[in-house]
Amino acid sequence: MSRFSEETYNNWRKPASESEEQRISNAISMIKDAIRSSDDLKNKNIEIFVQGSYANNTNVKRESDVDVCVMLKDTFYCEYPDGLKDNDYGFSEGTNNFSDYRKLIVTALIEKYGQDNVKPGNKSIKIKSNSYRVEADAVPSFQYKNFKYKNSKTPNNYIEGIKFYTYNTHTEVINYPKIHIENGKIKNSETQRRFKRLVRIFKRIRYQMIDENEPVNKGITSFLIECLLWNTPNSIFNNYDSWTDRMSCPKISLQNNS
Image 1 (cartoon, rainbow, N blue to C red):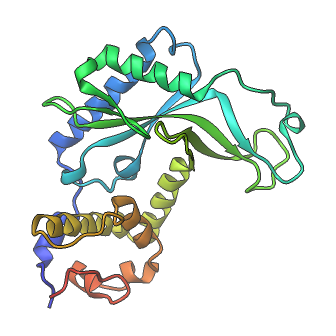
Image 2 (cartoon, rainbow, N blue to C red):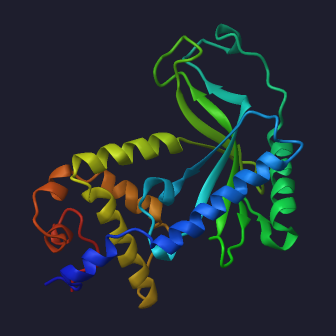
C-alpha cells in the first residue's frame, strides 16, 4: 500500500505557484539589469540564461531559488578532435581572464543589490531573497565549444557547454546546461508530460523525508533525482494509469512505500 494518496501525488506533481514564479522572474530580470548596467560588462558578448530546475520546469515550491548562467562568449574554451588545435579552426588566444571576469560580475551584482545581499561562493554568486525576488545563484562562465563529440572540423559545428573554475580550489568545471534542458523536453514529450511531473513528486518526497527527520543522503540532490528518472524507461511513465501505480513500480520506487 502506498504511503501517500493519489491526491497527494497530484498536488506534488505541480510546479511552483504563480506568486513564486513572479518572484523567480524578478530575480532573473535584476541579474540581467545588473550586468547590462555595468560599464565594464555592457559591451561584452554575454549570454544570460536560466539553468537548473527552473529552466527544466522541475522546480517545486521548496526549492524556488533560481540558477542564472552569465556566459561570456568573447572568450571561449574548446575541446578538439585528436590532433587538431586552435589554428585549425581560425581561433586565436583569448584576452579575457576568468578570475577577472568573475570579479566584474561580483562588482556588478553588489552595485545592483548592495554588499549585504551578495555572497560570492565557490561556484556561484548568491543573491539573497526578499519579498520581491527569490534567492538566486549567478554562475559566471565562459562558453565551451566541444568539437570532439561531433568530430567536427568546422568552427560553427560544435556542442555548446559552459566552463568555469571554482573559487576556492580553482577546479575546472564543464557542463552542458542547454543540452540538459533539451533532453528534458524530449523526455517529457515522449512520456505524455509525465517525466517532469514525476521528478517534482520525487523531490517533494525527499523534502517530506527531511521534514520527518528520516535519513536522506546529501548526495541525493535534485539534479540526481532528475537524472535517475530521465534514465527510467518511458514505459514506466506511459503504461500505468495513476501516479500511485507508477510510484509503486519496483524499477523506480524509493522509500515512499510502507
